[in-house]
Length: 487
Image (cartoon, rainbow, N blue to C red; front, side, top):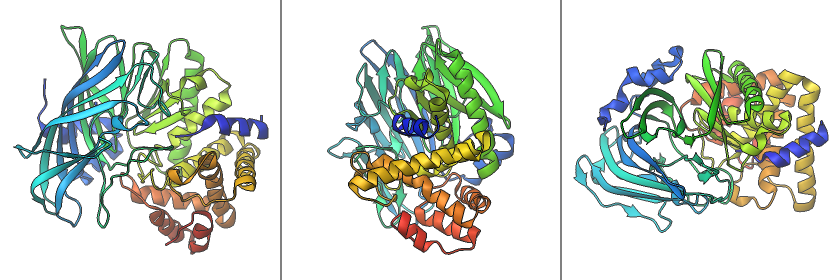
């Protein structure tokens, strides 16, 4: 996610988810359709990640839209601890989402259980009849509903029904993350930044919606069925993704391209043809550059979607959104938004992290990656203009409000501090490492970081360890000074 209006003005100053069996989600042949051929073996390399099957229907009126369905989760305990519960998150119930969500008819291996739901209604703790021992599996099934109300804008409007267009990320109960020592992740604070922290899973999603609605989702659509009641059933597979996002509109048009064997589709509202073709070129160039610098994007496709959200852009696995206000403005703004969100496919989607605790680990790195793109496309002077604008933003804010390290949680930053430190000072940390040890050496280290933690969850400690090995240098001093923590 990115606060583009502020960034762009600074840069311009400087420069100018019928019934399918649960085993269906484990069908490697179908899942492989969503991967590039050379990465299809990655599915078999992660056999014990959650297997999530969703069958649901989207119902839409002028006042609201709701998704109702059933979810089956085959969960393997990958921790060394016996588990007495499994925790799911209902993000639409966050005040910052402004929707409603509920679960019912919960079964664990066919046995009915009663969940414990926290006061925010966003944490669903499902008790297990018997402890789930390490390496054991259990099947959890539940019905769910998720509702969004028309013309209500809350925070970034990331979960919204605005102008007849739907943005429905996290519409289903999403698995939380379990960590030995701290247990299940239960954070509920979302004053700014990203709300979701989740681990990689395989998704098999069947969605039925009114036929006139065009659905755009994470992963790859492998089947479409026209129904007699003027609905259409869409079947998606999304392997090795940590979330499944859904956008929908009756107005979408699509322009398509390709880069390094990856299908890139830009979905936009009628009348935005010129900007869509421009955004397609930006996305293609970004994929080419990030593939070369960090390692190849493994999925078969990438979608760039225009939405009514107000955050500039928001990242999801295999799909990024760009707000409508960006669409018909000057190209530099659209380019910054598109490239930054595409960079998140490497930093957040593929290499995961706790965005609610260590946002710099993906945001600052995506920001730095964006400068690499501009340096390659437009040259070093143009790239330096970005760094100058970041420095101005950081230094000016710090002069009036005091300096902070980049390694704090979003709730620890007030006012413009989140932008000034995570988005402006953060990429300068990576520039400092590049200036000190060489940009080529840093990029090699980031490539090793990507290779070592692709589909997994990384921490600041993991990044420091990989960079120290790649650079052959101890980085404690610099991580303490810039991030506020070290190994």
